[in-house]
Length: 496
Image 1 (cartoon, rainbow, N blue to C red):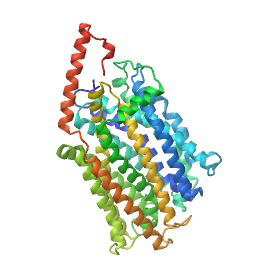
Image 2 (tube, rainbow, N blue to C red; image 1 turned 180 degrees about the vertical axis):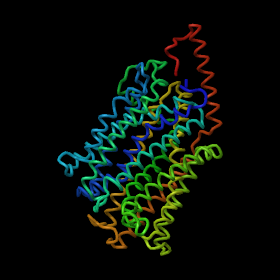
Image 3 (cartoon, rainbow, N blue to C red; image 1 turned 90 degrees about the vertical axis):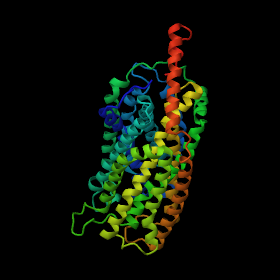
Image 4 (cartoon, rainbow, N blue to C red; image 1 turned 60 degrees about the vertical axis):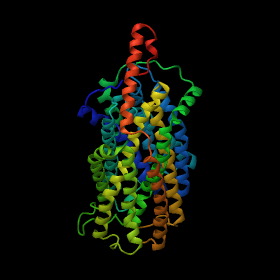
């Protein structure tokens, strides 16, 4: 039974979405700054850093389904999700600060970096999996679920963009820019505070609605049964379609985000002022951050219309193709000698203009894919008479973390293969190095986008099928309640 049966209150949309700010802070840090911080600032080899992050993600990914299963089984007067959202944020904040200011202030060992990264990832999952698992519990409506995900993505990107702007204009605004070691401590501390505010604030704002005993007491937890249930959930046919497309999409996203600072500085020279004679802080990097946020605002108004017109599967495929075509067009024109001089105002504004729509389509793909999972929950319930929101969303994080780690790992290999020197400065890098970096990145991005569009576009649950399934489940539940009222079955066995 959904917590809300009518239209979603605007306050609920905003408060629920606010919980995703913590994920945006984490994603921005890992995807944009972590590799360049440990490689260029602390002096660790890019290949070792990317390998450490990949290992950490793989370890964490194994834990994620267990967190999801435990979240599904949590049985308290505050419901299944709230205890996690109150307990995990403070330890997460502590680990986040350690990530940006390792003990002693120097580069940790290879194993030390793995340990810190694993701690951050697991604690973030303990916040994000229960939070996002609330979506199919709050509403069963096909479009209202998209609305909740629009707010989650808008809030997540807002959290990331705020951190990016502060990084470029406050924390790493000195003459050394992103190589300013001291700035990363302030970056970590502010991000930690924002994470706690986001997760706990969202939980408190939803407390009155969702703080209630679950309708069904789950059986005792056992590791064997947990993995059996997880395997059963992940075998759902519609989840396999989603997983194949999402895997490619997340690898592409992880690679694109982690290589962005390299491309933005060394190829597009966005560390220069946007306007000649303008303030030093008004650089192309700030323009880049603002453009990303504007692209998500555009997505917010477009994705709902696309889902109503085309459905989630076709919208995801359109997003994948639109993102790769517009995203790689500036690089192709640059290699062909048809692009304005990099570092100039014309080049920067043209690049940001293409980025605006490329990222909009990329986020539309991600919103569409993530929203699909909510429909998988009812498909699984129809087959097994059991709901497993936490299992499916932890499965999404399992895929995302493995794929993002692989994407960051690919960036490390691309940077190493292009032979970019340590401590390189924009404008001083040999053109052949940049050509190799662009070529390797572009080839990988094209392949991954095609794979993502192919599988996400074939997701088998349509709007009509979902609505029919919800009606079937409603009738089944009513029959079970009637039988319980007659004493034919135990009311405690009714599936929520």
